[in-house]
Amino acid sequence: MSLADKRELRPGIPPSPHALAGERGEGARDGVATAAPGGAALSARTRMLIEAPIAATLIRLAAPNVLVMVAQASVGLIETYFVGRLGTDALAGVSLVFPAVMLMQMMSAGAMGGGISSSIARALGAGRRADADALVLHAMVIAVAFGLAFTVALLSGGRWLYGVMGGSGAALDAALTYSNVVFCGAVLLWIFNSLANVIRGTGNMAVPAIVTCAGVAVLIPLSPCLILGLGPFPALGVAGGAVAVVAYYFVGCIALAGYLWSGRSVVRVRFKGAAFRWPLFYDILKVGVVAALITVQTNLTIAIATGLVGRFGPAAIAGYGTGSRLEYLLIPLVFGLGGPLVAVVGTNIGAGRRERAVRAAWIGAAIAAGLCELIGLSAALFPLAWLTLFDTDPVMLDAGTRYLHVVGPVYGVFGLGMGLYFASQGAGRLKWPWIANMGRLVVAAGGGWLALRFGGDLSDVFLALAVALGAFGIVNAAAIAGGAWFTDKPRP
Image (cartoon, rainbow, N blue to C red):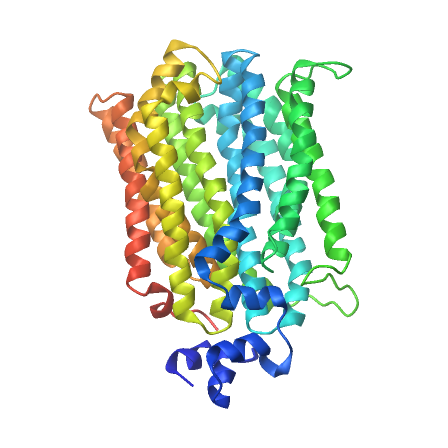
């Protein structure tokens, strides 16, 4: 047994298939392919994550996941388009709420959701099927707790938050109207994303994709109907888009829960003999909490930047919010690849195949970097093609154009960092992604403040944001290249 495999062993957790194969004198591939620790057979889906060609596997699994992200992004874009029909104040109001909504979405789907997927993938890779099943109920408890926390925080503190971000008058009223409806349904969003990540942790990206796309097919026409009062629907204004979103998550929760209860999933929900255990909560939270802190840092960066831009007026906020929405969309798009990356890396870490896990991380990050750079360069070259979809106010267009010209070309480095962040979730090692994102926050906030302090304009603020994105990607890459996953010893 190699030194790396010996370090994989933990008290109370069976050794990896790779380690057992080494003890029996078997090849690593055969040992992983045929049995889990204790002699239990691995499922075909788990074997695929351990044995199949990495790039082809990532792309195949990412295809339905990317479709999910495109579908969800289209909902936000269509909603923003029709809200823009209500006027600049309504658009500015929704832009003020957007960072908080994305914080919740990113935290539930990409942060704590990544912790759920990572925990299940590592359990399946190590052959701990009973733990994988038990993790489902543990994940639901975490989802409800965080969902309620968001509801309380935003209903009680929304006016203060949006005011600090520069909202006032009709824009602030629109922000509160939209926010109160969305965050009343926060628990539904958390449960939906947690259930989806339970399924993704098994390597199944298709079921969450089918549920999401079916829901989006209904939500896309429903949102403008409730916003503008088309047909038999009442005109609810900005609240209409929020009502449609909450309804979407409610139906989606029922569909995903039905699949897990049907017994067709690799993991199953088991109430009989179920008992909550702190080690299983910890296995999710040790990744999810740090990832959530990273998500808070990301959204705090956007919120601070919005506050700095707010000094130039509501139209500038709308322009920056519309431009930065493209940056926000990169995160769910990279998540389309990041979900499979968490499953592949986590399963291979659980199986003791460290070199394959690291190789998967670099392949996935390279694909993410190329995708994000293509989008960033396109936006920088043709900013009005994006911005005029939402408004034609000259000040709004000027602010959004400046943002995309300066920040768009750096999206590739940001995509590299995000890809490695998701891979680090799968490995259960998030110290360096947290450090990298803290650096991004400090550079963006400090640089933007200094730009305004010494008489700079919007372009100078956006330059600080571009440097911050570059730092995030470079620090993550340097850490993984230096072997940070295996030099930072985890808590037993």
